Image (cartoon, rainbow, N blue to C red; front, top):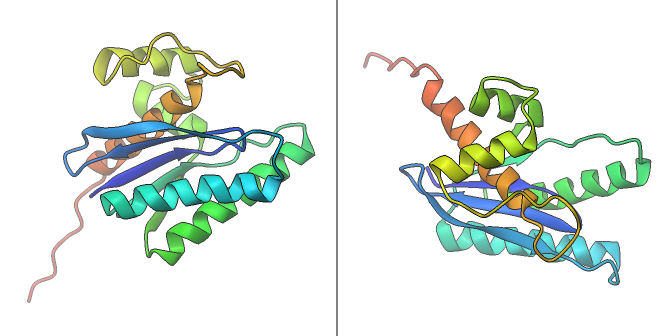
Length: 170
């Protein structure tokens, strides 16, 4: 299964693509400037995901479920962005899966209350070193990339641990 893991954010959506063997083959972030209208920002992100899905023939997309902040505007923007990405995925017949941040952290670290830095350290030690975790808004921000890789690894671990479906006798 080719997997695309997404950490959606209007300013910087992180993504990670994993091959059939669970190997990370591409990662990055799609940024949008706040000087363009919100709908165009969403389209830019959704189009990037479409390009990745088509390029790698992605079969499953796992996306972090929405974090509901105290800011209603941010929550609404994230809901709309997730909808745009879901629309692209469904239009390409790609299966959608979701993990909450706590589920992903528990699958990866064994504890749902693990910190972002713990996940970044795990990824640096076991997958790829993207440097120190940078979670502030700047060009070097990489927390969205770390988050998407973490979501992908957690989903792959969940799939690996799932019991095999019994085969029907024919």
